[in-house]
Image (cartoon, rainbow, N blue to C red; front, side, top):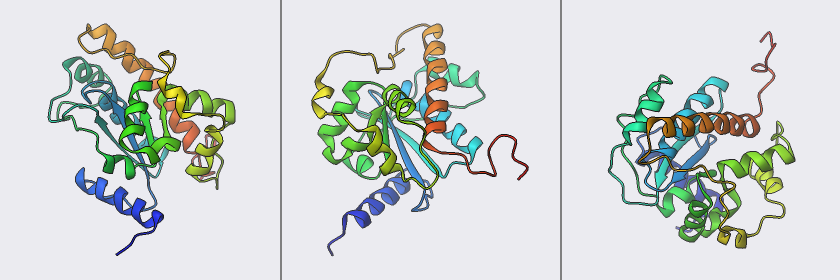
Length: 219
């Protein structure tokens, strides 16, 4: 049976959720966070973003993966950094990024430009919805928050104006979140503080509040 693009995308999203043991409605936004080993930055961002989604009532699900082989526990520094925030990362096991993961994601958030490069090589159609965390915040703040009634794809299209794939080959790290792996707890704490700020801003920009959840609402 031949599948249309929309049906195929929905199938991949549900298949990805099933592989993670999640129940995901077809309408929910699927966010995938990517780093190198999926042991420090991306799992921290995953749990921080999941908590933020829950806090604002966003219809979204978040997962993480890395470009290396999976099955490894998280770094101890990241576990401690999240524990200080009331989040338990101890049960996390790293996952290797697959093309199916990318086909099923509505938004791919990378820790560094090199990860965006790897994503686009693995699954070229993911390019319009793949950004580093810093880049999405920078472009989102310049373009303005996603508006009620505006689809995520429409908003990402606005953010993508002027983007070229060749920029992925650049070597600057202005849009990167540095890897704390192997560093002291202070390095993990600094990364966690940065990720908290970026994640909060991403959620604020990407998921506009409904009237019933806006500050000061009596609903």
